[in-house]
Image (cartoon, rainbow, N blue to C red; front, side):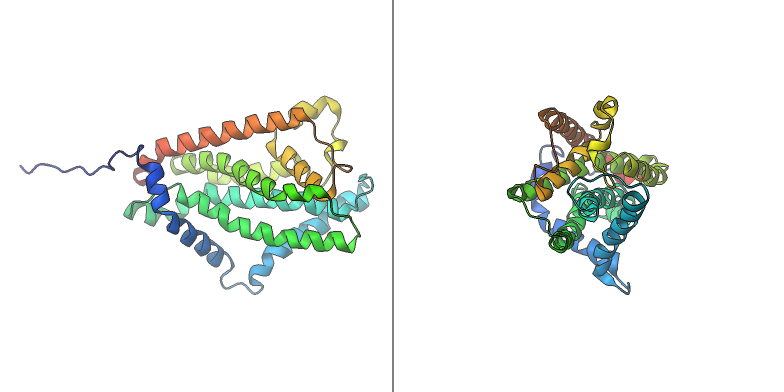
Length: 274
């Protein structure tokens, strides 16, 4: 009887970071592929990246600004809304696609080795380009409504990187669990719909009653959107407390570190379970 040969990755955990660096070109290839596939054979092409947040802003402005007549102090309501819509759509699009990235690349995972962490990260990089382009739409709207830009705008690149970390943690958790529990792919759209109503996209956080503030701030996107508005619209318009900053850092780091650990721990079984 012939001896069986079992092939295993050499020092899988030890060499993981080295492997990830060695496959860095693949990260860019996947990111460009995802962008190309998303808008392939569409009439408007990449313009959809601008149309979606613009239409969302118009609907929110009509419903909350004209019908509900929510107060926005001195900030034009369309500017306030778009400053919330852009980081929210960056999160929701990235999270939704990254959570399904392993299932959508089943043929690659079962046929070739590469650090699977590349797949969800490449999705986030691809949607990052859409987000950066849409920021131009926000600045055009600010000029239209004669909204003065603040020195806080210098914090925008840092907030962009922070948003990626916010997205990455839960995306890794759901991407890993999605391989084994396929029901999650149907739960994710529901969670995002629910999240839209408990996140200050169409309204200001100042409208939330004080008794709900602690529970409300457990959502890391609350701080993130408030921080974006603070950066773009100025500290006179948006106030952020130190408690919010500390709570946000703890929640994001917990989700990120645990997400990376769980993803890397379960990665070796992806090809068998997918």
